[in-house]
Length: 133
Image (tube, rainbow, N blue to C red; front, side, top):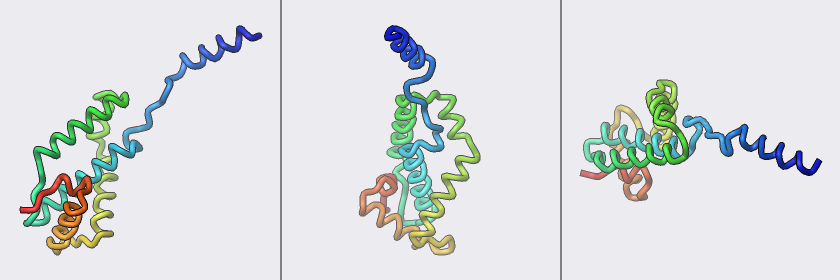
């Protein structure tokens, strides 16, 4: 009986992946950064006195893709996630909620500027993607 237990354990380990990947839509690090990027994009497009650090943001996006690949996600999985309309809507809704909770008003660009300046001053992920003109 002692010999059967190790064999059964090894067979069980080989038949299932060591660590199953959670869906990309639930991967916190990736989603938090995509939400931050969306918030920064809304700020830079709405506030006339703040620009986006486009080259820096592009580099960060490439790092994020490499992060996902190193975790074991395939390029096909990453592309499907990034192309998902449902996930885009979810990320955009979270970003819009954040902006609204922090006082952003669509008809008042200065409210976006205030949030942007605060994010830059606090050196947040959002702030790192922005620069005051």
